[in-house]
Length: 254
Image 1 (tube, rainbow, N blue to C red):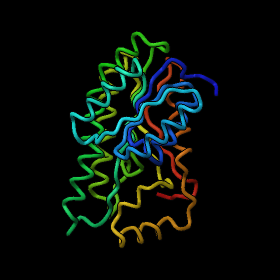
Image 2: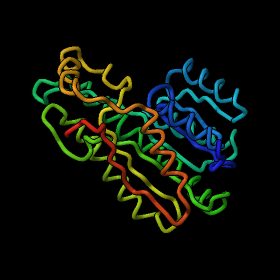
Image 3: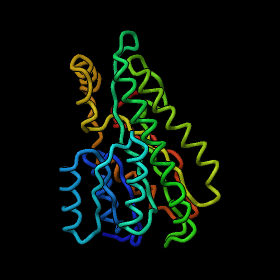
């Protein structure tokens, strides 16, 4: 433990598994108190106990970020119980691939609600606290990291609405960055390629099989690889902002 984030508090959405879970551990190891935000209570409770066992502060907050009131309350509870908010990792998301023609509208709606509205609700609620932390915090800088995807860089057949949501996250992040960067709130975008997480488990069986074949010959990234990338971003000196990171498995071509 190097303690580069001592005295800070981070909120991580989608903290019950995958990138969110790994990132919560990584930020805690740097000394940050962490608010674990997700829907699966048992998982975040277990993670909070694990982190607490290392002597660090962790708060489990069962939340559906697609509900604006719940997202806002998660942010407010973090500040109330952990004392401040310096870092937000907007990680919760879902990938539901398949052809546009004949697609279940419910899948599109789920992606728009979680990948876009969930990100917006958390960002909106967190902004005043992050700006305050940049003015008054121990680092004199704060961080909002939005997790997008390589799908936010290039559109491809069978991923139309997923592409739409991730392109949207990128556009929102860059616009917000331009608005507030002189106030020392850094906005960063992380765009992972294939990562070994639960993300593909939500796909329809036939789509999951096609996706598995597509990446069969490439070793995927691990959630810890992305957590390490995020930790790098939020531990830079105040003068340095990492605006965007595209990170793929070595063998992934697109």
